[in-house]
Length: 147
Image 1 (spheres, rainbow, N blue to C red):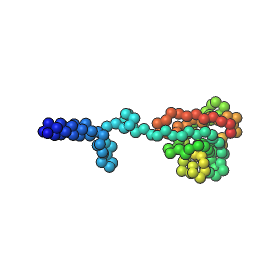
Image 2: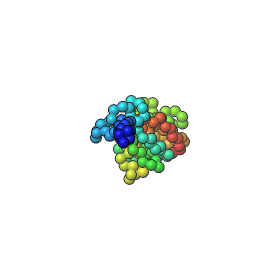
Image 3: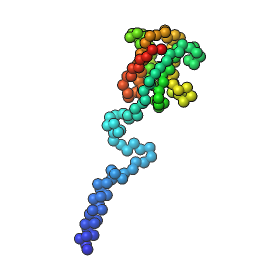
Image 4: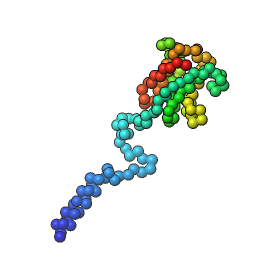
């Protein structure tokens, strides 16, 4: 009987020792130490949906009479994309264009992400190509189309 009790106690103790990672819980607000899930030094963002179509708008009041790019999505992005460049017939449309962060706040009512540009006119184009990032951790995306 003592041998069975000793075996049971040894088994219970070993289960407790080897299962601390399985049953351990962190306190609220505690990161738990260690590295984030991606194994790197930064927390990875969830993948963002990509735009499938865009249009240009040359000042109907939405962007204070400035030019606007409207990027349409099938699923609303959760992180504001950043427009880095617009190409017109294969060449940069603006030589000193600063990155423009899209406005995702009105997506539910308007159905697109709006980029208000610092210029008042985008010329009529046969083909425009946009370069943007869906989020900081995703690679550069290009989308082309006629407008």
